[in-house]
Length: 203
Image 1 (cartoon, rainbow, N blue to C red):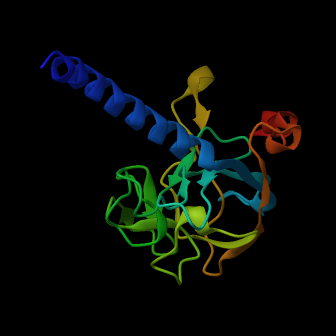
Image 2 (image 1 turned 30 degrees about the vertical axis):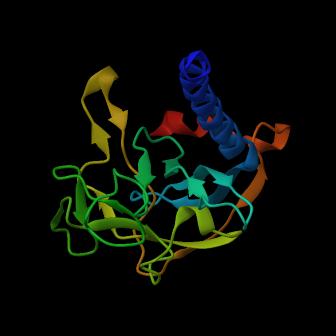
């Protein structure tokens, strides 16, 4: 009877250790990578700008029970304060404007190109590999296609010294071909190049 009473708390402790061990194994089985791409394109004004895409992935062995995971893709345009986040169906924040990897419009800020009609949460403004509705960020290889379908309603937000450039990469009926780089997260080469801000003074 005494042995049974002693066994019960140890049984609970053993369960906690088993759960903790499983979590450690789950984290330990993943290999973490950083991905980024830099390319040149024009913004809506026609000014040449650098464009940067970046995201992170956690990749598991094929025999492991978890699927590979990825953060949203962050898209930044040189000299602009407007950042875009592209999601896939694995992200709770993904909008309902389309399937696949996409970013939806923001009412009052974007309009569809070339029609010029106001874009909202039901309109796709950016898409990666748009022909594939099942596309996932975690499965992207070294080459991808970026389709931009919107433009900023106004490329400047605010007035005077407080004005901010919110322009972004120019819309195009033909997707941009982008080549990304993959490195182990934390490596010296994992960080994408910084933007040259000296060209922004003319904006």
